[in-house]
Image 1 (cartoon, protein in one colour):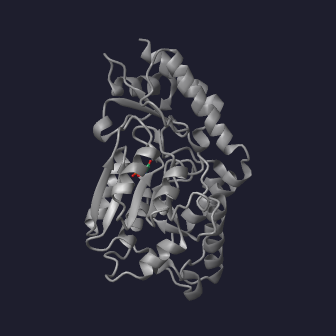
Image 2 (image 1 turned 30 degrees about the vertical axis):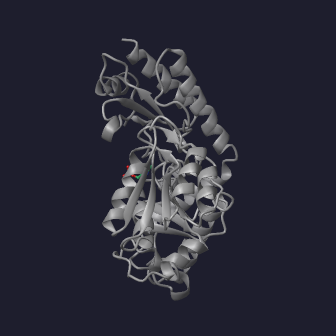
Length: 358
Ligand SMILES: *Cc1c(COP(=O)(O)O)cnc(C)c1O
């Protein structure tokens, strides 16, 4: 099997794989599982520095984004969609599906969102029920300063939804301090558990908006209000994927035990970017470089497939291309979670430079 250096799914450590093979109970009926689920959710909240409750949903990261939009949006609601990347813009689709009116705030994809420019914009127009923003927009490797964006939005009473699927546990997140109402994560990125789970934390303000809806949520699977008293009622809206959650718990313990986790991501990302830049190649973008993924511009005269196949054949390493407007233009190295270590970073950079220099 190729060594994964993709921006998710990432490699899964053995103790996580072992946890997934443990004997299971009936998660609908066994009160012990409700305690285990609640405890695991509390671990998530703790690692994200928030008192807000977390919920684990059975579905890939996209479900978390959709569930946030489904549960907040009512017909006609104006929603500010902060767009400086593919996932950023993609939120508009979820808003539209649930009857909302997405207002795109589009900026240069090569730069992080500039808070002062956003501030000027909001002075003119701030009549939004909520706003969406992506922390790390993976297809282009952009990182947004949500620590400034979310408090600014909240100063206008705008609820904030942050897609942190590709940053969570690779970049620090201070959900309470940064006033993030809903933050979404996924199992297969820096957490390094297999694909299949999404989790989010919900602030009291966001929960209140959901409770006070005039129209019912136009979804069952993506309805977050159903989860709000699962523990008291000992009832989940659907049977929880217990083995996935056992694996998730082990992965969360790995993160908790790793005191250098954010420093390690910073160091590895800095190393990868520096080596490629020093060799004369261009990293996509002008600022806001994420520490979980590096997006390298495909040099003229080469194709992304040539590079990806070359690195796979020569070094047994799997890299990723990009998609949407970046298809064919960028090569992505995922140095997140288990992939983020100097040994693999060195092997990857070496192999990549060899292929690029041909
Ligand atoms: C990975 C990811 C998701 C989940 O989407 P998939 O591409 O389907 O895995 C959502 N948002 C971001 C920013 C991601 O990187």
